[in-house]
Image 1 (cartoon, rainbow, N blue to C red):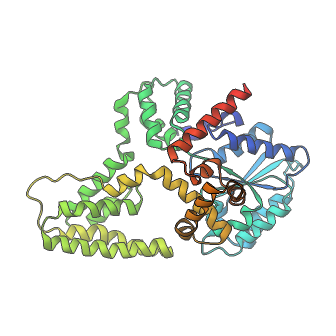
Image 2 (cartoon, rainbow, N blue to C red):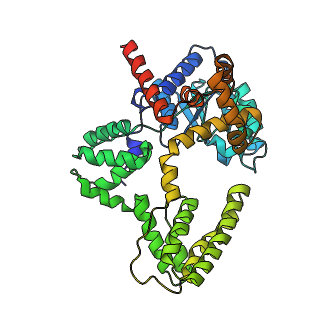
Length: 429
């Protein structure tokens, strides 16, 4: 069986970890304190950020390079107190098989413990952090759930951001050289763009298009048609609007790697053009309205069982409503709402990160923090330097978040951050 490149080329040294240098250096400094025999004040580190940016790889690389026994645990599988103590707690207090305590415990998907079914897992993990005799590395995509506050306050928080396109391209080029694959830079750049900062995804796609070949051209990218989100959605829409049964319409979403709310928006926005008859259109909108109610309950109450009803209604309901087809070919259109959300994604991600930190400190919902508190905090930080600095420390805002709250646009904030990084590198050299 062919070895997966994401495992074959997983970093074996800290120096091999791509991007997020500041967080990587902070982790190394934290580990050095353990090695000097003086456990740091915060005995756990919380590495957080989107998937595929090197959080787990950093810990594994450090362990391999410095001779640590790395014990991996998926927290979402151990939500109750007894099992958390048995699996993580015992490991944090016991020596390894060779009699040493030179090991690191990695608790992945910590944010998965904070679900409604949590039965003491967070409280148990909080006590384990207090008592651990070995480094404890927690991994999360979103650490700002209020339920995680007891452990978040005890951890060294290290943020990992999406990788830059140039960083992903550089790593893909290195892999190509090691595999002896000749590939144009244009292909690597396209793979990096499609990955959206997720190196793991980019490497998987690269391996998929090579197919064992040693020469890869731009035509090979066509093999990723199933991963091309827009093309994938167009195919699904075509199946939905031309289906003759609920079963056939529902099958359009099978294997579709797209958020369900997004595909709902695509169907909703294209329905008026694909179903021209007013009576048919009314029936289609009735089906979509029912599906919308179910999806809202899924998102608000986490009632996932409703998905089995929402999907047939939003696909089959629309398909069976179309009794009169358009007189000619009508192309599918890209929903304006999704285009707008894509154009503002960087700013929305920054605002949401700020709101989650405010919510965690003030015990509010993220939506309330976003609508009710963020404008006031932004005003104070923009007009009162001393108070603003104190608030930045209290809420643990990053430099880019502080700059945004003080009136900087997202693009300007990112450019300022880049200039600071260049300046630091220049001083070091």
